[in-house]
Length: 70
Image 1 (tube, rainbow, N blue to C red):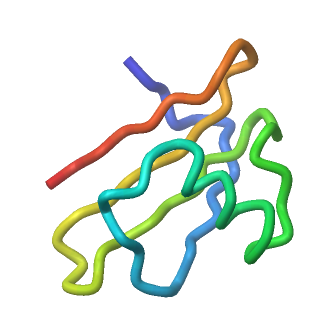
Image 2 (cartoon, rainbow, N blue to C red):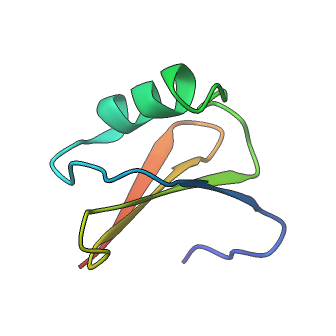
């Protein structure tokens, strides 16, 4: 289970295509948000246009985890 204590959160404020996976969302983080997707202690949040879905991209040291909530 993911504990959210001690994390910084970055919200991508534009609509996101929820078909994107780790590579696509990492590209948004790097190229549009000007952040490093390999930063530890950071959770990147992405919402669809209707705000009914959220994806969380987290780097956990040995790789990325992608959490999805419909």
